[in-house]
Length: 544
Image 1: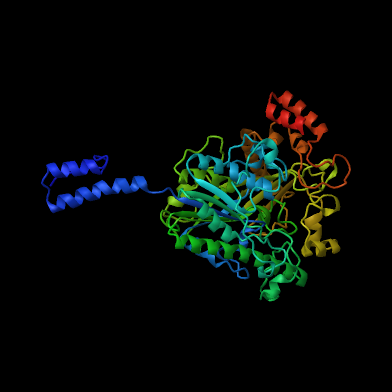
Image 2: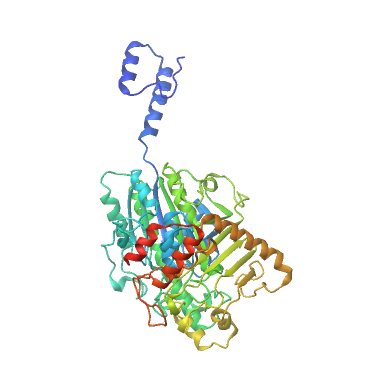
């Protein structure tokens, strides 16, 4: 029998010429044809598509596959069954634009300058995975909510960091389950995106559902068939009719997100792209309720994360490694067969995806770090409320870096307005309201196995002092290495960054779209003392 090695033939002409010169048995011919065709097919095979579905303000507990009985998410659950469900995924920050910026750049909020705070600008030099994939031949776009809020254009970016927009198709208002929902027809816009891909390139699409961002139509959950008795109220919130309605209104927003992803999946199957599409489902930060969103407790920063890739990833697995949403950018680069930019500090999840196993797969992934700075204009001088936190399998350690400041701000404006917030502010004497809105100590430590709602602060217990010292030491080491201004001697730079959304008439600096000149001076002085030079920041600060 004649043997042929892969790669011997460069084209069909070589095969024909050899065939004319040779007398082959039928078995030889078949083997030759298979060996010839296989590398040609592999060479012509399109790289995998990437579909990221990112919800707005959704905590990890609120998908069916994460244990929710009152929120029905059949499409998310089906993806979890055939893919990988991550149990310990964390966003970088509990607010929309900084969390999304971290995901796009593959870097934590303390590494991405102005983009690391809410509603600021997005420096043009920051590398984002969408633009890197475009260079590799991918067709990119988004529908719904991209990187937002903030101003990306002011620094010279030509498009949103999430890609070009596909938002023309709308749903009629009376077809929406609730009045507060977006009219964007996400699934139809996705179809428009696919049709625009005339060269049939591999695609990377950002489906940014506006749901479940406030405001919700009050009692829309019951209007859509939900029963108050079925609601599960987290233990950090009062359990009464008002809050149960609010939870059910939240539930139908998530279900609407699930429905549109289901429609997209059906379309992918129709066009034959489903098996070659990596689908990722997550959210930017936790639920928009007191002590959740804008907070570094579990319901503020712990995210659902499901990754399905029918063609290549062994399914029906649950992974307990601690991962961050900043790990998605390098994962996408590796999926595409592109080099991961060295500047990305996230680590690819491909080892977890390619494994056949469940549970803890990488012992070094034993914790995640999160943080926050400014979420809204809620304090004098437009001050931030800075936090850095560590999350392990058992403990959450939270360091409030400016504990003299109010965590909820003037008039409690650092909490999203909602019926739950209104009820709790009207009952400030209740213990849960005191915990949600009261001043916080420098250190917080919670045993989340025995205290899943983070209500019993163990930081004052001397038994836990060695543990907290170790955790704080690790945080400092990691953040100094990452160049966090708070740990490198120029923390005042965070107070200088502009806010492009509205501001309030609070004391001190309160101008929108401007850097705080006093804190620019302080930051530059601190940077000079630390031997740090950032001409780009200085130029932006002077310009605006």
